[in-house]
Image (cartoon, rainbow, N blue to C red; front, top):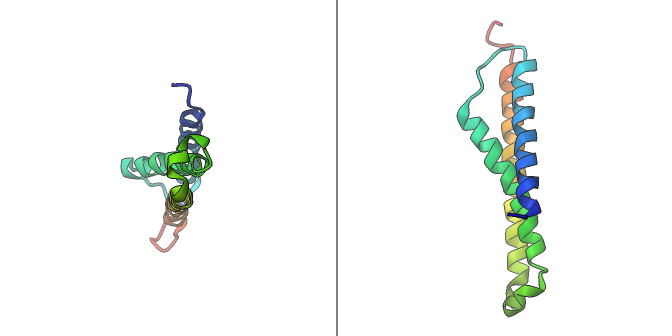
Length: 106
């Protein structure tokens, strides 16, 4: 249980939840927090840490038996990182747009 990426993942998840709740609280329209959005924030934040870990794992000497596949492992880590950052960004921006949309007569 001494994996530093576990702590990084938990820290990023907490930061994402705080950012999500802050966006909702400071918006012009008040909407209730949604559990599905919180789950996306937590899982995507954990995906960011996991993507970095997979990228670093591609250079680990313990994977010598997979010498020809290191590039694919690294690209998989980049893909995981990309998708996770995109998901967090879309969630935060979508929530910001929703709470700051003034076309609903608020």
